[in-house]
Amino acid sequence: MNQKPILFERTFERELASGQAKRDDLVEWWRMVQVGDIMSTPALCIDHQSTLPEALELMKKHGVRRMPVLKDRELVGIITLGDVRGGLPSEVTSLNRSELSFLMEQVQVARVMRHPVITVQPQTKLADAARLMLEYRISGLPVLSADGLVIGLVTESDIFRLLIDMLDPKGET
Image (cartoon, rainbow, N blue to C red; front, top):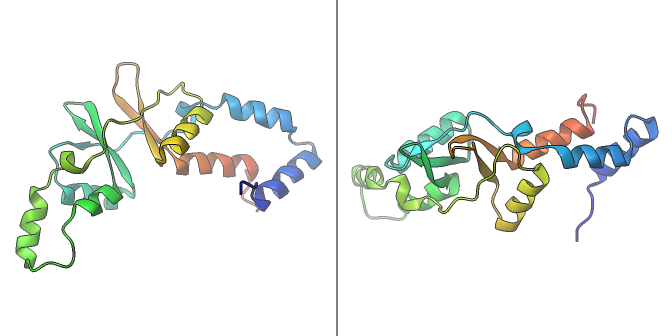
């Protein structure tokens, strides 16, 4: 069932009623937004030879759930918090703590990263990026410069922030 959230309907109707926005204006504005307008920069990246504990520590420290994986500045994969957790040893094990720690330090990001990576450019329309996320069931896309370098990430959170700012710019709802 694909219904609009009640909050969206109420806020949108209020904006229309007050004359602050016309439906066609909002639709046109939304169509013009590009990934580069809302992407998170800089992208926190990790080297392909880094270990899973290093990846987990970086993610926790910076509050991110995904990181592009680089090899000599070239994007070779992406790793998510779920990938890191899936690559760690099970809690049900006969290994002691030091043995577990040793094993974890041996697993490199390259072993559990996802590849190939779906990417976008800064000039990609946000609607197209959102469509890719839905189609591939992913929550973020690395943004590449014209020369192929990672310059940012566009995530579901970035899109939600834009939507909230558009619908409730003063935070009144």
